[in-house]
Image (tube, rainbow, N blue to C red):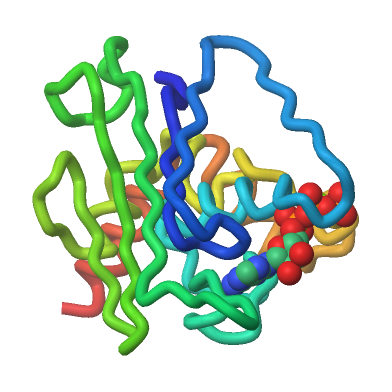
Amino acid sequence: MYLKSLEINGFKSFSEKIEIEFIKGITSIVGPNGSGKSNILDAILWVLGEQSYKSIRAKESRDVIFHSANKSKNFAEVVLEIDNTDRQLKIDENIIKVSRKLFKDGKNEYRINGNKVRLKDISELFLDTGVGKSAYSVIGQGKVERIISSSTKEIRDIIEEAAGVKKIKLRKEEAEKK
Ligand code: ATP
Ligand code: MG
């Protein structure tokens, strides 16, 4: 499984649709300060269902929609294309497209391969794969310091996700609630 491409439209500093193609291996993104490099990482976390606006450096949900003095967008949209030829994700397709769209009125729309899904479906798809929004596959500026200074419970959560046992634990907790 690897990240094939990323489409960003109206998210943060990207006023128009842009597409980034990734190759298997390492991609470096370079640019001057404030040019939007970290916004690309924020877009990846956001489409994976990030709900904490602090984690993507925004004050409130609508902050992620592009706005400037003379132009504003009505929505923000990010589409992540994943190569799943190795079937690491449990959907029987070679390409999996995950998308999230936020409208100005606060409505979020999540899709997997074009079909509307719940946020929970996106989280479950990536749980224990090492890719989810909390899987530390995205290490933003300052995150290493935050991991080091985490509480023991937070560190345990990180290890459980990495070990691939979180899905079972969450299911157990849900079953116990019923
Ligand atoms: P550095 O090298 O300093 O880490 P960077 O390339 O990572 O910089 P980012 O933090 O990704 O830069 O981009 C910051 C820019 O994004 C700022 O100029 C900010 O104004 C802009 N920005 C963030 N949110 C929005 C938004 N909703 N609409 C328009 N611009 C935005
Ligand atoms: Mg940055």
